Amino acid sequence: MKHLLTLFLFVSTLLSIAAQHISPSIICGNDVYSRIVREKHPELDAAIRATFEDAKRAGHKEVRERSPLTIQVVVHVVWNEAEENLSDEIIEDQIRILNEDYNRMNADTGDLREEFHYIAGNADIHFELAQVVRVQTQSLFEIDVIGDDLLSDLKSDATGGSSAWDPEHYLNIWVCKIQPTTIFGLEIGQILGFAFPPTGLSHWPDGSSAPTPGEDGVVVDFRAFSSINPNPIDNPADGTPLLLKGRTPVHEVGHYLGLRHIWGDGGLFGPNDCAQSDGVDDTPFASAQSEFDCNKSRNSCDLVELFFNEDPLDLVENYMDYSSEECMNMFTQGQVEIMRGVLTGPRAGLLNSVGTHQPATVLGCSLSPNPAQDRTLLRFNLPEAGDVHVQVTGADGRRVLDLPAQPCSSGLQQIAVDTRRLPAGMYLVHLQANGVKEVKKLIVHR
Ligand SMILES: [Zn+2]
Image 1 (cartoon, rainbow, N blue to C red):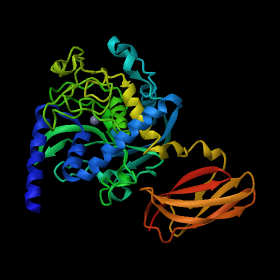
Image 2: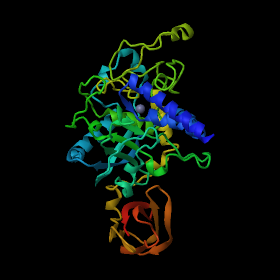
Image 3: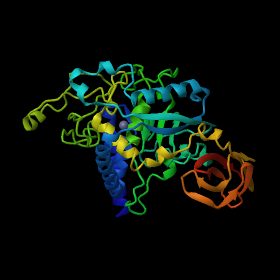
Image 4: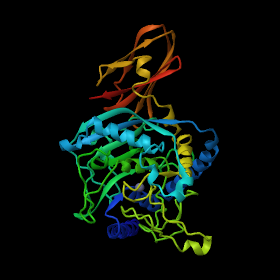
């Protein structure tokens, strides 16, 4: 039975690859992920759909009392060749673009066709750069579409990548060179990025937690990061250079916050079907993606008129299409509600994270030695006496040490953290005192 199943998956993979090859040569890895989930983890697929519906309901409710939501971002630059080691300036430019696009402050909002103005939404979601982690590697990162491995190597210190900061509290974005996707050595396309949808609902079936928490986040090819990137990338379909404006990360963060492709993923791995929905109420029907074009008269679902008495054009300006990046300039209000519903629901931990800059001025905690082997000393300055609570979590967010709360007097303090029983790797040390929280990254080596 297993062999038959394997064969079926293999053949369906080949068919999927063939479908990719005919139409887009540059694809977003979420198509690969969605297929894997649909075929191999139907229970996970059901849970993701349930999460989506929960978020949608929460977003509807939340819209009346909207306030700004802020996410702390950790950018992992995992580089091999020097040009992959993107400068701080490029990384900051990408954070700027995320902030503009998620607050409808992008300069090209005026390019949106007038008939769609009334559905354009401002997500009021803000991004703060908590840390840039740079890792030089000898590893090459190719998505294995047959083996279904979505760059787990990239996300672990142990395999030439960079381990996630606590994914419950930080948006991890990995930037690396994503190798061209191949099948039996034959190049079939280039994935520019991918992200995982929200996970972690309590009703998830045991054993369905693929991907692991430590893999949660966004991956972007280094050439598709920011609008001032000097590294060109050609459209393999026609050899022309792609004009990228930092919208690949905007698109992928949309997936991370629960959005699906605007055409509902019909037409790529399934039938070219107008009825396949992205689950958003205000996005127009579309049967297929826009193939890096900006055709504002495109209407891929004109048959809808027969049933719904309307004939909306495709919303090619939407960040969740595959239109060209200079074409994209908006989310809809329905998409905004879903993303905010996700951020106040399954990804609410992101809103409680501790950035590196904000709390450092309060307790000023430090770890020494760091990297540590057997123990490290956590030093901090307590403005007034109070109970101090220290926890250590792994890169996957799991708690590995929990020291009992202890009373401390004001002034300079230190607490020893025994690291002898921790395997080598990256950890986060959480210090909580007088209602203030701070987090420090700790490396344990053996
Ligand atoms: Zn996508």
